[in-house]
Length: 375
Image (cartoon, rainbow, N blue to C red; front, side, top):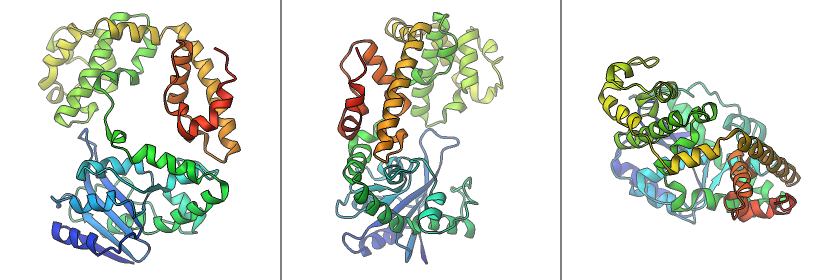
């Protein structure tokens, strides 16, 4: 296998321009986000079958328009594995909405296999190729990269085109190709797929709210801290746990410290991290969100409502699993717990249904079963 190391803009442009029109490529990225909110793009791998792999130093490049022309070309199939990890990074680098995407991991989920299995398992099962995975937790921002890192990175794309073509044939045979293609368009080929969820919705992911529904003041403080942490992390590009860990956020919401000295009593406090934002945290605690947030949180997490929602959500999940298996689709692709919870919430509130399971191939798959659930 030929491996090219590319670390300047002119060489990258020349490589992209050398690719024959319409030739499929495999794409992968290596990145780091231990300290930052947004991933640090460290390495781009471009595979042209088993013959050639280009390893592009993303830390050295400044001009990403060649990537944009590659990514947005509808005539050129782009094979990726777990594309939801890579395409947001590529979109952020060049600003281009991808076209003609083929996620091999998702394709496996439309062929009666798990839709979350790893590349190593797929290649071993379908091509008989065993890949070493020794660099899974490697530091991709260091330079120079080791020979082991370069070999690992190249292997991640060298066989993707071949195994992707195998799954495309399988999708044609089992009748799921059109649904898979629809999923690719919906998930990856729209500008809307790369937007961030509103900062104001950050509270929904807090475990604290499930355990303290009877303390509305503490709930409001938790909501306020979650919104502040999400916004601040995006503003200064800092990993959220480096501002407040989940444990620290929960402690602040429950204990309600009033002074900087009180705030420093939080669990595992590192003053160097907390002190620059201490006054902001105290301000949020002193003036947590009111009104709409209180009503939404308290309504969402009352014990009786939680029980009804869970029962109904479980039923939706059961219907989805049964329907999906009949079509050789991983049930997790057809309906996530979040999808089921959203459907159950709107059903209980007697509101019009919306969301993923109410449109496209998921609606076609699930509608008849969901219609059996009485209002």
